[in-house]
Length: 212
Length: 212
DNA sequence: TCTTTCGGTAACCATACGGTTACCCAAAGC
DNA sequence: GCTTTGGGTAACCGTATGGTTACCGAAAGA
Image 1 (cartoon, each protein chain N blue to C red):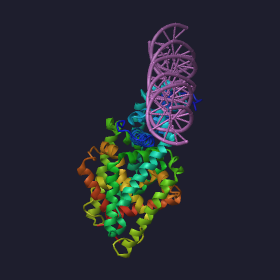
Image 2 (cartoon, chains in turn brown, red, orange, purple):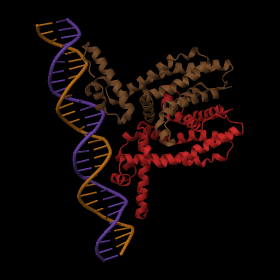
Image 3 (spheres, chains in turn yellow, cyan, red, brown):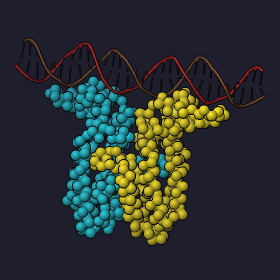
Image 4 (cartoon, rainbow over the protein chains, first blue to last red):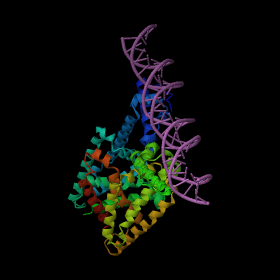
């Protein structure tokens, strides 16, 4: 937990703050905002509870920082896909696959979003950071759709925002509701085979829809 | 709150239980399982906290009953659509529209599902009632897809389960993430105009995908 | 070397929480 | 009419929770 190596004071503080943030992501993801325990976060971070309040002020401010962190992380990876330079169909397929796989790899993203929606985006609404992350993404989708339409491989009436929301929905909903869907349909939807099948289906749906 | 009309004892008990259940749906939907307050539920129901424990045993058993209730309610309305007798394309379109609108009309359904998924369907997993509700639905989708394929209006390789999940995902994800999506994309996605636009898009996506 | 700064610890506090107990009283059963 | 039954009330209980205070000790700055 605690570092045995001697570090300058400021670096140690930074490291403690980072450990608290990571522990918070975990605790919030597993128990939600209300269910998360501040004591537990501090303990898991190998830090004292007071340091949590020194660095983050309150449980709710910590929650906001967690949200900003996970949003930024996802957008970073999404941007790294560099789909702007791909053939339109391949670009869309890659975005679809990435969104399914990212959600599956990062279940914390799902829970945090859901909680924040339950609170009507009360915390996210105050964050300018996150809003700034998403407008370039929408431009990107718009551009890919335009290229596809120009090349005659995409229908011309696809709305960028609706299309992006759909693209995310296809994968996100499946992963977000893995457990209840598995219970309701009595299937093991979390297996790698099932995930692969879903991936193929999602690509088919989006590209099928986009056909002219 | 309390009835002024005199009722036989058993009927009054039943009414109290129903009021508690309704208040619980509200409280759980607004605050989640951990965030919900038992005192608040009792107060809103105009009932004594002890009666909650008499009727439901514990907060968690109450949670399960709430889940079963909302699932059953949705399935009931969905079944009432009677899509089995419609033209395949109209049947699918109606299911898509219903799922978007139902979710929009019943935000409690979203939150309850999300919470239950966060808990890995721990409570729903123990319920046989809900599982029984969904197998006829899957049969129905299978049948509609088969009719569409036979009539030459649907592709032949559409999986019933994947298709149903997609159908629900299109609307559910949008409504479930209304607040964060609105914040991120800086748009008022909850307006009736936006909801209508989404509805049209969802139908386009599913029927577009199903084209042979 | 002396003082200040600041990351860190541990014990504490008021309150809110899920759940229970002791009791009441009117309808139901005889 | 008398007793039993059971829905209902209010006050209570142990504990867990978010947040704070008093204090420490070593690195940083002069």
